[in-house]
Length: 218
Image: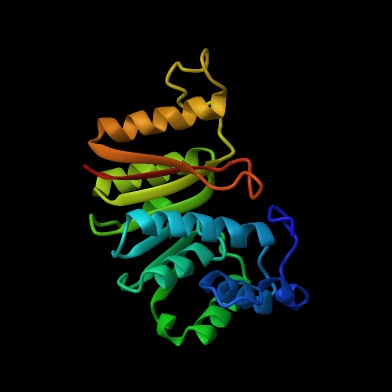
């Protein structure tokens, strides 16, 4: 399968996920829901498993959450997180379909994931939160990082759509391409605020915008 495809997974794809791993179970639920692009399944899984290797517990706060699959996957990978909050200015109508399908497959998830359709600025965070965001476009990633730092919370972002006109490149654009300069400057800003930073990537065949930035208060 082409993992970067934006085509929606549906019942026709179930045969591709006939194993007994957690990923296969999640993928089959996504196929039954029939509303999620294939790319988003793989992005959520690859980000979630890397995040959980580093960060356990805490309320999951998925900012610019889209359908919210990342939040659900983080709860499935670590049941010690009591709940999750998914926030998006424009929640897809089909997010309810995916939520119902996942909660039917895993009843322990019921009443643990809440969605808010509002701006990121309206959300209150705490130091115990685990803040995550996949492909919050341009300056939204900076807003996610700023919200997490202001609260002293752990954070993981997979940036995309770097705004080179307004984004802070830290005067590094003479040495590296613009998007990488923006992300390197984000790392420097986190370190300046006393954060320990871990930089990783997810597989390039899922998305070329694959730099994963994880950080926690030192």
